[in-house]
Image (cartoon, rainbow over all chains, first blue to last red; front, side, top):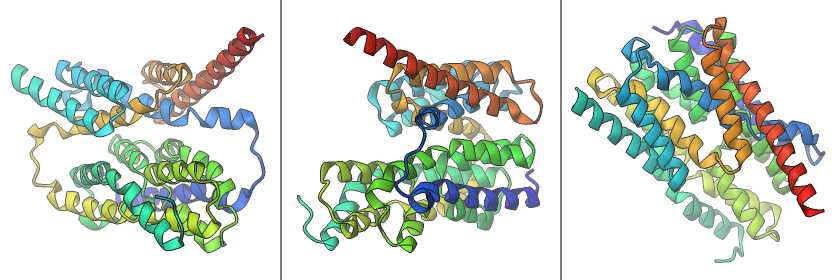
Length: 108
Length: 240
């Protein structure tokens, strides 16, 4: 269960922080250039953080008590592969979900 | 269709962003469902979407709160996921930096992956647009996106508690994230960043306060930046 105080601190903090990130350049920096090294690192934030968040869930899902689960693992691989090949986010989600349900039913 | 007035710019924005409805509707519904599964009530769930409007960051915060990570880590990790918004802001600045402050503030609030992608493509294609046309186009792009983001968060929240455990919704999140990341693998540097971050996250699983995620993110970013530098240098040598 999520603590209510924590929840509201997160909602409001994340709201202010996200707005700040979106406003920082258009609003405050204007047309000044940013250092190249900073841009070079910012380019990889999303592709670094999201896989780092997902990797432990793929290999040791909380729902199975941290046990490796073939259905969940395969579904993750399928979603990633379909996404890489087709560049279609929705199709990747559907393929991953279909794999998960298919395997959960088969291995049941 | 070339843009001739601010009104047609607004309408073209709506038309160009319309396909994103297919992404926004299931994604926001999913957030509503998962948030109520995690114990949030309907009002809290909707407030989350209205205040933050950032799919991936909202999911990240939700997951870490469920794992009882410290509040500072929840915020730092979710904002790290959202750091790309600063990139978007930076690259939009040359195009809309001259608009009135209140318009820029409003545009900042509704800057999401879809509105950014849509607007940048148009600005690059028609560099002669006036600043007013650009802002009209931008607000046109967000018109089919943001209201649906709120509405379907609400729909998901109302459906949420009726969905049984056997649907394995715990795994909707990893699948959605992987699907979102996949099209971002444009260069070897992106792939290296993701691999290094994943391996670091697994190796750092025992690090307290969920700091492993931040470490993994930083390691991935450095790896990506270094790979980019290395391939640039190699390309330069090949050109000589």
